Each structure stands twice: as C-alpha cells, then as structure tokens.
Image (cartoon, rainbow, N blue to C red; front, side, top):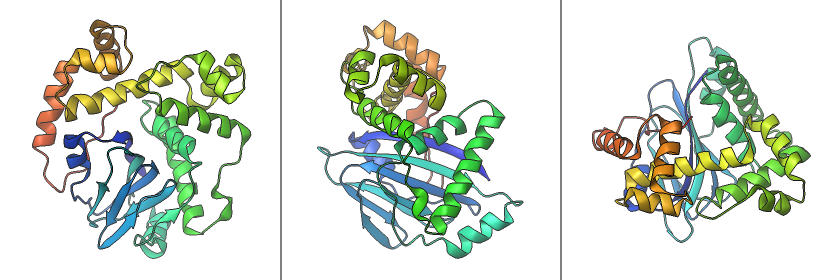
Length: 283
C-alpha cells in the first residue's frame, strides 16, 4: 500500500475553499480515501449515504464511490484529516479485507483522541525519507485491520499521546492568536523542556516550529481561497511583517506567496471531477 496524499484541513470556512472541498469527486480503481473529522458542523456524503458530522467520525470511500463534504455553519467550521491510499497489486490480503469487510455505508465512530495518530501519519507520509513513509504505511495497515475487526483497543491511552493530543488541539485552535511555548506548557501543566522533548520524540520537531508549519498551511488555504492581500494574511497569522511571512512561506513551500497563489488557483480551475483533491505539501 502507498499513502499518496495526506492533508490536514483547518477550519473550512472560506467560500472558494468550501466550494472546492464540497464538490462531488471519486477516485481510481485502486484508491481509497479516509476522512477523520475533528469538529465542525456539516455532513459527509458517501455514495447515496448522508451522515451528520460529529467529532471522532471516520469514513472510508472506496474506488468509484462519489463523496463530498457539506459545511453547514461557518461559525463552527469543519476541521479534518484526509488520507488517499493506493492498494498495490501485492497487497492481496489487504485488498480482500477492504473489498469484503469494508462497510463504506457507515460512519466509524472512533472517538476524538486520534488527532496525534493522524498527525503522525501525515508527518511520516510526507517525509522525504523512505523508511518514514513505510512506517506510516505499517501503522495505517494495522489501524485498518483493527477497524475492520471492530477492536475495542483502538483508542489511544498513552500518557505522552494525551499530552500531544492536547497540545495539538490548542495549537490548531491558536493559528490566528499569539501563542508562546510558556503558555502552551502552562496549559498542559508540564515543563517547557518536557513539552519540547515530547514533540522531538513524537513529531521530530519543536512545538513552535510545528505551530509555524500550521500557520503556513493555513496561509496556503487563504492564498488559494480568498482575495486577502498578502500583508493581511501575514498580520492575521501573527507574523512580524509581510517580509517575514514571505521568507518563512518560501522556506516551507519553495515558492513565494504570490507565485503560490497564481499557480494553485490555475490548477484548481483546471481540475476535472475525477481528479484527486489537491493536497499541498508544506514540508
């Protein structure tokens, strides 16, 4: 199996962005898409089934099944993780499991404690290192087997994971706010040093570098789906200046904000229904 794309969508609220994510689309003969919703109000349409979204809801869309997200309240915007998987020819057992045991006409309610699990998968899947990508695949395959078997051990109970879960939740909700390492550690009631060690061990980065990456990911969405000036995006995302924002943005994406906006708006405008969702890699 290959994880072709991995994305975190934070607070789906901009009209153009909502239109893009709300379109019906489907995937090729070997592709499955997994959606894990963290919060927000709306519905998920999977084939002829319609589900009300709840935190901790997970859906799997098999090949050829049309699906889309419907956001219903911009005051309570949707946030979610999505993974696009390709089941290869040599994955006969896994393919059989998905084809025979997958109930795509249901919602898998796995709870809202999987934020770190999916973030770790995303980080590894987007890594340039092949061994990290394979680690993500093995974790996901194990998860799918437990999910298909209805295993009650799915929930994550590790203390370190709980701290990371809470940190991620606070940071993802603080993209547009001033946040310091001290205040974040204080919320978790652990030391700054311990928080840094957790992030280095679990996500191979520091808390504040992770927060910067979240802000760049939010910026990619704002550049594509809004007409805000670049200096306005920089201010909203708490960068010191437009120059500072542009420099950090280029470091993460390899493009200037202006160039990025022009390129991906053209790509989105040319995308046919059958094409996979455009995922932005901000490594």
